[in-house]
Length: 411
Ligand code: PLP
Image 1 (cartoon, helix red, strand yellow):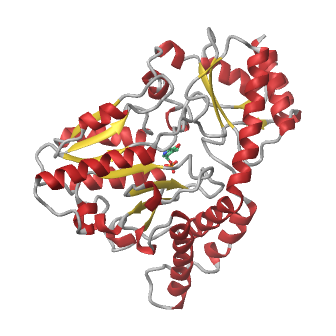
Image 2 (image 1 turned 180 degrees about the vertical axis):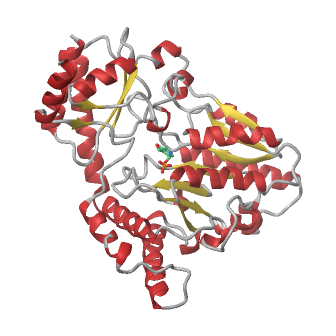
Image 3 (image 1 turned 90 degrees about the vertical axis):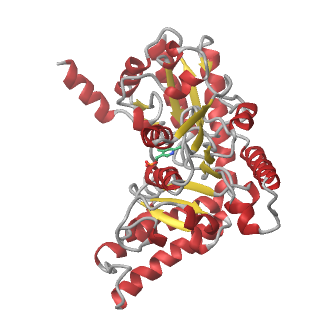
């Protein structure tokens, strides 16, 4: 009986989605742009004939949009099947390209997305040395530990730009400076000239940052940030699922081992026929994001602050996870003391509010979040924390309704 009552309530209740870091709805403009590429312009971009040329032109257009947006070259944009795949390509690719180095070292932070963390961990079985840099209680990477971990065998440093769980934004430019100084020091100690830009860039380690969550809120410029590689995902920015991008400086391309072999698509780095409709959609999604990025970041940020202030006033015992000031504008990761997050999540869903207890990729994992655990406040805190993430469709009315339901449930 209770089940039917619940079903009835859910049918007529306004359902509020506050899990936009897990995924976003496809924007109508994106859907419209994709539509002709399913059945009308269905050619394979690798074909020589006019069908193929039409598909190739669509890929080129998206590649141009993304290259312009990120201030990289056309040939530095590699389309993939997801950001997970982009992260795998760079982590596994660098390891595969380092065969001549005994125990190549990969440095990651303790709060990376599993597609970086677990990939680096898996490579240790093949002789790679993984160094995991800790974070402080706000989630900032320990820069001194990073400096101390760099050695001549270090082939890759991968640090997430902004955490998908706690929202903390890392000082990537500062990290790039540390890597740049280290490269110069190595070049000098070997008596090499750093005047040769190819040598300067191709000298190890490669610096990669996952900008999946940050890209929609902050202008990303590869040159200005001083990094070598970015990963982007379509479905986090109102584009389709199953498409991502690895941006990789051209100078690095010859040094990356091929981990997906087959045809020569995507510089030979990612064999397989490109998903043309999804890539067209991703290009459109990037265009839309860049159109009103600053205003949206401001609007969502002030809604998020309003949400937090009201919730904290009503439930003074709750605590924020991550940095209060330097975090993604859409993110609130909250510890509800003495409440089990899995239980709370289900009750909130029944009350019509969709949130998550960490990243969507690990939601079904039995272990508590590795990100909250890395903050050093104990596993218990990780088991009592929920992530609320706002998005383009979020309104103040929705926040007010969600606030009412959360406070009612917790009281
Ligand atoms: N990196 C971050 C920071 C993410 O939040 C996610 C998705 O949750 C990914 C990578 C993986 O993206 P995709 O779903 O495209 O594989």
